[in-house]
Image 1 (spheres, rainbow, N blue to C red):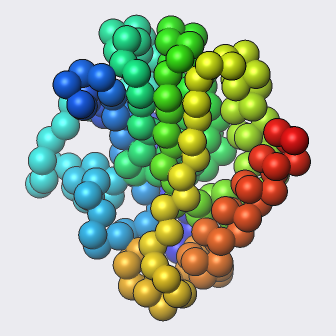
Image 2: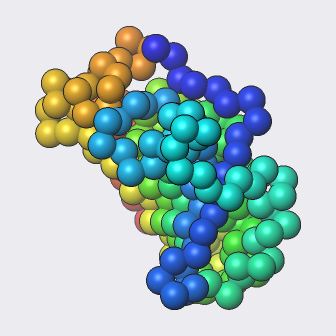
Length: 189
């Protein structure tokens, strides 16, 4: 199975924690995790499952102004780092959030598959995030790699996909985690 490319990515967003936070979720994922809390908009047919408010990426840019006073943001669901375009858009969303809220706390939750496949693009993403951090010293950005299992077999079962472009999922996730750690150590000093 190759990485899923979503032609017109869509997100949802909803407020959480008594309007202190906002969760932004992409639609579309390259895994099919059977325990995924976000199945209804990650990869299942959204017409058959719960419906969320769908927002195009272009409209989301405008709507960020309405949720600017939130103290934290989580970018998840689908896969925020599914491909290069989505990776750069995620970095853009982070930049836009911080342009209206300099003290925001932002968490990007990823399965790490694309990061493990494309180190060159990962470096571009991290450089953009570091650029944003350098402009906003009081913000915090966390990138979480969500491991799907403790070993290759369990990961394949849980993720619903054994390999992506011939690579075992767990190997891609471990490579992504190590690469991110090393890149951040090197870049941040």
